[in-house]
Length: 113
Image (cartoon, rainbow, N blue to C red; front, side):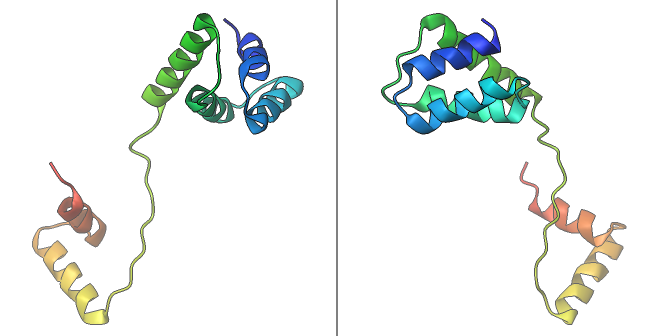
């Protein structure tokens, strides 16, 4: 089932007007953005009163599974926190003792195996 058919199924079968509007906007624009389509499908599958056909539901579930598998879980995120000058010096000292940067030291301490 192609994307256009799935979007038309959402428009026809979903009682949630906001999802119908989003599906219509994506359909009207043409080229959907994968992340936007993924969010719409997840919301459409979670809609309590929606009655999609088996083929459309399976296609949405498959697309969501593929997008979840392709998601980059190792993306870097910058974390900032406040500490005193003495606490910072202590972290740097402990990191140097282990031959690591402060970031590596903190990351290793936070990692749960």
